[in-house]
Amino acid sequence: MFKLKLYKEGVVMSNLKASVPKVLSRKISSVPPRASNCSCPLFIVYLLIMGVSSPIHTVVYGLTMSRPSIFGFGASMIDSGSDFFAMPYRSTADFYPYGSDYFGKPVGRWSNGRTFFDLIMEGLGYNLLDPYLKSTRSDFSCGVNFAYGGTTAKNASSFGELFYSDPITLLVQVDQFRNFQSQVLSNEHGYAAKRKLKEHFSKSIYFLEPGGNDYGYYAFLGDEYDPLESVSETIAAIRQGLKSLYESGGRTFIVMNVTPLGCCPGILSDSRGNGSYDEYGCKLDWIEVVELHNSHLTELLEDLRNTLPDAEWILFDAHDILLDAYRNPQKYGVLYPFKACCGSGGEYNCRHEVACAESPKYVNGTLLQWTKCEDPSLHIIWDTSHTVESFSRHLANGVLLGTHLFPPFNITEAINRN
Ligand SMILES: *[C@@H]1O[C@H](CO)[C@@H](O)[C@H](O)[C@H]1NC(C)=O
Ligand SMILES: *[C@@H]1O[C@H](CO)[C@@H](O)[C@H](O)[C@H]1NC(C)=O
Ligand SMILES: *[C@@H]1O[C@H](CO)[C@@H](O)[C@H](O)[C@H]1NC(C)=O
Ligand SMILES: *[C@@H]1O[C@H](CO)[C@@H](O)[C@H](O)[C@H]1NC(C)=O
Image (cartoon, rainbow, N blue to C red; front, top):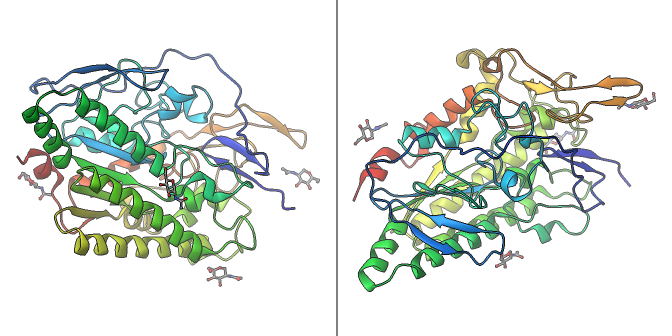
């Protein structure tokens, strides 16, 4: 039996046979903040107040109708605090120093500040999206974020009993969206009003960040790991999610590919893999499985363009931005491309015994504790695999300026069209 320890976005996964995540020590913190500090004052806001089927929620759905909404699906790179609201203080992102360089406190985002998704919202003049799971004072005027840190595209059950997988996987998020949509629709009365709402959903933008965890956590866990099978299952789940959103009326999709995990500190400091590195110092096996995924994703979108041509199927090539930065850090003003900003030391400042924000502990008689770097902008990565806010700007620009969208797509135009 192999003894393995890896991080599932701050939830310590020790020899994953134990199928329950370890609950991190609780710290006292202030009330959940409002994520958004901007507003859409010019918009007519339709407030649809309702009780939601979920027993813990009473949600105000305030979709702004005058501009398309944005709906986010995926994991920690775009999560805006789902875990914080669903299971407060379970994940390290709920603790200092997460959020410290922008929000001044942890807000459940996997960064020292805003995520690149936040920066896209700001760039469009939108409010930051609240997570779907936020139960009070949620601001859904500009859209809803269904993304949940740590989740995979594949169904949780597909990983078998051996591994714990977070349950809010991509298809569950899609179900949550459908639930949200049908509640919003059922609260609108009259044919014209319902039609207008349906139109709104079809004009909205569906942004997906799927697949990172399918490889980050589950690749090369054992000798029997089959990259081809893993990629085809992950792509199948993404296809199902996209088709389901299409059937719900979605017509504009931006799908992000998987970032070069083989270069990120979390994977570089992990014992998995066959020990081969490329000329830049990245783990070859991860580089290859991610490239395989990304080429299949490109094919999937091509296929959807052909079979469902009335929708826009846009690829966001985030992989290219990050790979370029790992290989040419000086272009981005980065000095430590392979070193996490926040971590407990080692070559990649990413020792797994004590993660960023985790309590210090004695390892072989030495007290191990995390530190935060002085200047996050000299790094690409904040903790294990998530970008520091300053680097997130480059990712956001890939979308806002359209430099990394294929086929060419102007998101600013898309949110202003009628
Ligand atoms: C995954 O779950 C969805 C429902 O959430 C289900 O429709 C689908 O068939 C499942 N896929 C697999 C491969 O089990
Ligand atoms: C490790 O895996 C990579 C990716 O499959 C491969 O290119 C490389 O040759 C392998 N190295 C060894 C030593 O087996
Ligand atoms: C602790 O020390 C033992 C014995 O020297 C060694 O095998 C082990 O790898 C060390 N653990 C860590 C986390 O350094
Ligand atoms: C997108 O369209 C807007 C408005 O039509 C225009 O001002 C902007 O320059 C375009 N952006 C890009 C990157 O082409």
